[in-house]
Image 1 (cartoon, rainbow, N blue to C red):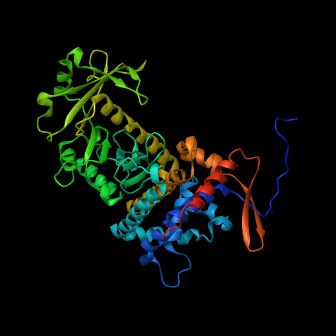
Image 2 (image 1 turned 90 degrees about the vertical axis):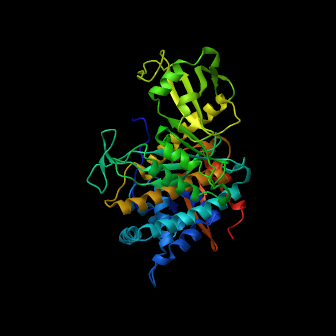
Image 3 (image 1 turned 180 degrees about the vertical axis):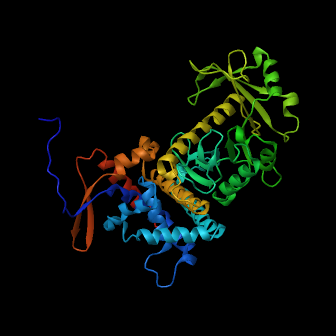
Length: 454
């Protein structure tokens, strides 16, 4: 006798739907109006008498990626379940559409991005007090991502980490401690693109701002947060230019001048760092620098440094001092205490969670050869990530809102159901013993209660 019961397996079953929990994503598409917006955006690419709508094809790809797919052919998992996803185009049709959009250059990208921005504003209205702009401030995190390539692809080069692939620049709106985040930019770059290239940070920020509601595209209520890659004179000057007036919190490289200034800070000037719950962070202190360190930077810039005991086994750098790990960032927020500003900047680490989710949602590998095609793939990934952020925002509560894509797939989307046809209606009956059936049905009830678009 083994540890598990022996079960005979045979084909030929019917009236059973796998990935039935994906109806959560389908309903989110419907309530957000994403299907209508993408179809309207891609209408110029629809041939006369075409059977499949280009918008539906692209959304099918995004749904497949949201469910764990990592190539165009994975849309086949949707094709196998027409009761949930409707008719799905063949693999050659899908491939032709991606090629056609890629050959259209910036025109197709602009159409997709405009549709996403329109739907994002609608979703935030539906979310109400849970929306990222509910407290009248939005935080956008900009960060680079290394995507490895295991074959010769256009613009795949050696990276600064001595790997081979691409180095896209991503941006995410932070949903705060009670949620996840959603992508607002994915700028595909060669593998040898610099980490602190100001022109790329400016372009990425420009694209990210265009994804926000119009009243958030300029002004201090929008905070741009980066690591030290954004700590350049040109980028900071662009953020604060007259008429733009954005807030920023950007990491800074510890230069020799900053290092010498830190050594001169008296012990009384150091303030204990704090944790999100307000408690003091053990072994960490912050201080504000002044003097020559600010020369050449825009007016209003505050330079804040943190020193912290390194974790056991951590290697100190030559820029560290007195056995303490030093980090530094700049901000133009004038009124808040430096400990609170340092905590706000440290929470930029949530961007690493968003990047991990992106890697698990199609960004582990860019599956196509041409850069233009992979840029379309990157847009598909962002639509998938949008759905994976919007569905919890609109339909989940409590700890379930924090679930990352892998957990959503395992617990919710992978649930199977029985397809029952009664009269002219079809029902999906989820297994009563599935531990998260109540989560799925409760989320669907919340989505159904939302008003329809338009």
